[in-house]
Structures are given as C-alpha cells and as structure tokens.
Image 1 (tube, rainbow, N blue to C red):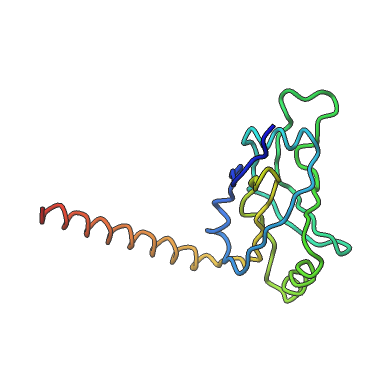
Image 2 (spheres, helix red, strand yellow; image 1 turned 90 degrees about the vertical axis):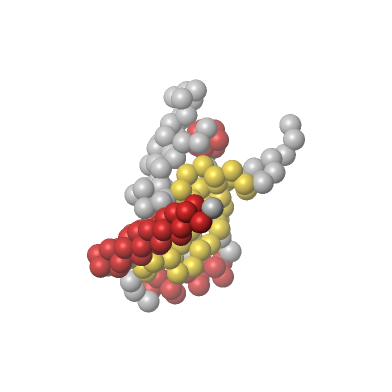
Length: 158
C-alpha cells in the first residue's frame, strides 16, 4: 500500500476562533487506538468541548469526541477518553510556563492527517470578553458590506 502524502483535515473547531484570542499554535502527534484511527479516517470527530492540559510533564487531550467505529467489535474505544499528545519536552515546558501566567488555556483547533499520521493543532489562547466577540462580528460584517459595495460598483462600471 502506498504511503499517504499531504494533509487531510478531519475536524476543525470553528467556534474556537470566535470564543478565544489565539496567541500561539503548536502541532502535536496524537496517541490513538486502532478503531479511533479508522473512525478518524472516515472523517468523524468533534472538537467542540475539547481542551488540553499538562499532567506530570505530559500533555493530554480531553473531551474530544471520536465516535465508535461502526465496523468495530466489543473492543471498540471509548468515545470521550483522555488521549496523550506527543510534543517535545521543551515545547511542553514552554506551554506550561505560558499557562501558569494565568488567563491562558490550551484548545484544539483541528485534527488532521499529515503524511498518514494523526496530528492535532493546539492553540494557547485567552478567552474573549463579550464586547470583543461583538466587535469581531461587527468588523466582519462591515468588511462584508464594503466588499459588496465594491463589487456592485464594479458591475455598474462594466
């Protein structure tokens, strides 16, 4: 069987960019069981409630929902189990110092396959206040209206 090449995105956390200000992003490997890999290859996962934490010098991903593999047997995986993340020790130390500063959290942005290996994109993020969310929505809406106005002007000029 030929090796997989490139990236295949399985799931993204679209709500994360609305709820948090992303400071840094990291790519981490994901330790999975066999049926979890098969379920991910079918494109099934949910990052909505997911978060990462550091425990005993190791990084863990929790509350990410990878549904049971439909063709699996009695030894299928638990859908919301704690999963180990693979990062370099220096990166874990750097992230832990950042989180201990306070106000920061670790959230998964996406799960994808990179050259056949399951990866998760983690973000060190700070929660947005309600007025920040409204301001972001307003800016997006203003940009959309400006683009519409420019497009209608172009059409009138032709």
